[in-house]
Image (tube, rainbow, N blue to C red):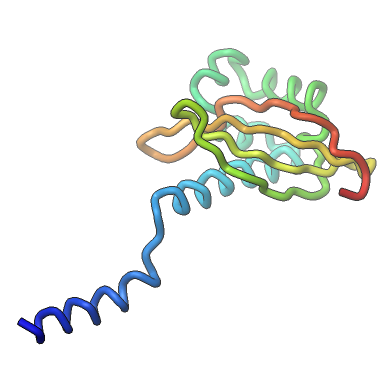
Length: 138
């Protein structure tokens, strides 16, 4: 019996340091989707940026061109951001929200809140809210 417990303890000791929680996995996946969409916008690749939008967003804007125009004119800090920092990921009433600090071309920082949408194929972006301008030199 002691040998079984010892083997079990040694097995757990090797597995546990490598285990990740579902939240850590979600956080990495969510941040990856947001970063990929931001990269696509910076490259003015609206078709790729569109692919990260949820079905609701795609229904709302109907085409990648309309979607890209809305982001370029309504969220210029997203369209041409020069730096990105991921802040906290929160579960609000069953929806995952990721705060992101972006810096625009003029050096102004903005805090955005991304609402995420889970699918069987991964996460998609279901909306973005501008929280506030964070100012220069944050």
